[in-house]
Length: 103
View 1 (cartoon, rainbow, N blue to C red):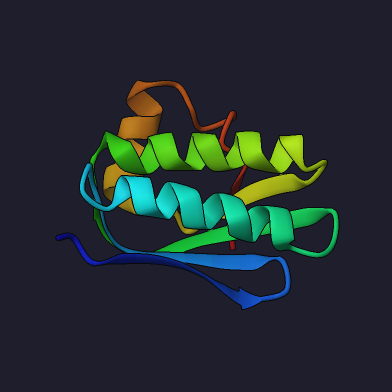
View 2 (view 1 turned 90 degrees about the vertical axis):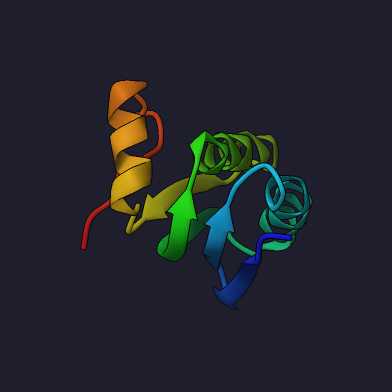
């Protein structure tokens, strides 16, 4: 099984890590949705700096998390998108949709 996690590092800041693929995706989807709904405040950030590798499943997760945030009345932004995910996002024209933050 792929090792991947999504955890709350600080209020409103979630960290996504590990290998994002079809094996890790379903559990991350469920955990991330719960964390987003439970986050206090109007905004949430998902930090992707610790993502080791991702298939298109990673982008699918981020889009699902955006829907979760919108349904909960929260803004969601994405920080430190890895190169492989960024490449897929560019091909799919998702960069603007994903509300990417730069440091």
